Image 1 (cartoon, helix red, strand yellow):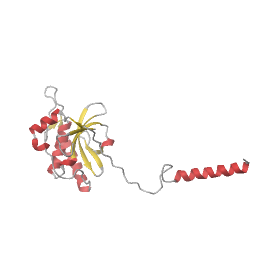
Image 2: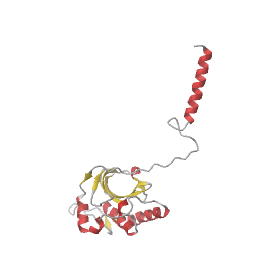
Image 3: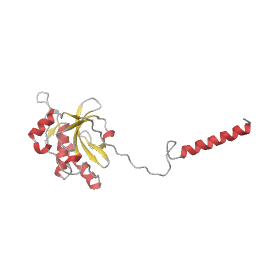
Length: 197
């Protein structure tokens, strides 16, 4: 190849590289365009045994463990978002954190003055149901914290993904934005049924 042909090829290659860098797709995003947000949901795997403390909770509180009607997903409009944030902050502020003693074992309770993580989650669920929220969209999940401690939270299935109400923070986060390693979750159709995550 002559020197002139090499110069033309080099110029074409640099022009192609510049256009590719500005193209919409794998080479780069288009400028000025808004992309739709991606919402994420926890993926249930096979059915598993419910936590024993939850089985005992349902035996003591059968009305808290009945399958309900309604939507399996909440439309998170501004009013619903405001209610969700208010319930999360209110319950977080009204229950005094209290770890159960090893002698007593793990006892799940609702609407208590003092309790641990699952008591917060159950109370939030109960308050939202009393406000007319669908039982099917409100599920208790069990996970491990970053330090390996067992933890329970309320997961709310919305049109914006699965949102986590955690007693450790008033911030409501998407499930992927937490520090939790997910273990199991209630079925939306029947609160007595649990699935691995």
